[in-house]
Length: 314
Image 1 (tube, rainbow, N blue to C red):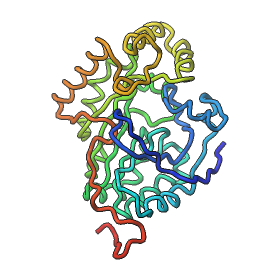
Image 2: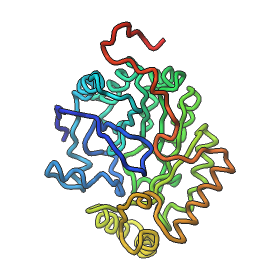
Image 3: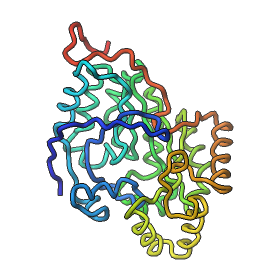
């Protein structure tokens, strides 16, 4: 079920020290990729829907997102900062093929030379290389591909309707070949289930042209913790207790730690070891370590919509 949402505003602003961006936009609510660990699932409660099946099947499409974005960036007081697309829900989930909201936002960014970064696990991002490549030449665009595992067997239970791992790596390669800076985000890292893949994922991404990397330790806010526990018992019953025990060790004895500074990477001995592994692998591979949108984009070329003398990108 897809509901049409007429948004009144679309830019979300952030001041979290854990994030590498200050403003973002989500073209959709809910996500049919169905990733069991998705931290955004509880946000569906604001719509009176469940963070479980409703989050995956009852989606909202902000069909006027580009129109509202044009209004917001046209205001005299608007300060241009890179716009990150797809933080809470994937901007390239399957319904984007029909609604093309992400595409319309990118067309506006192209028109106005507004810097933009994308976070996705959908290979559909390749469709928009025709916009992203010329923007990247002007240092106005970058992309982040999230890769959780290289094991298709684990992936089909954990991210059932997202692009396969090999397909995401191919997307990294094609974006990179087009001159678009690509970051790989190993997220989430799940103790005893995917943590051993940290280095292989970084190596595979580097081989295909990624220039920077980030990682996020499994986060289990609100209802997600119970859903994840149940999922573990169903699909990985022999590992379930080990996974949650290690999560507690890395999260101060809790299922989740929402504090700034530790919520992305955890704390304690095992969290420190994970961080050291990541940093050493990045140093060995020549990958810049960063959070989302680690590539710094140019904000000086922005031309406010309707401004006198505005032309095309070239």
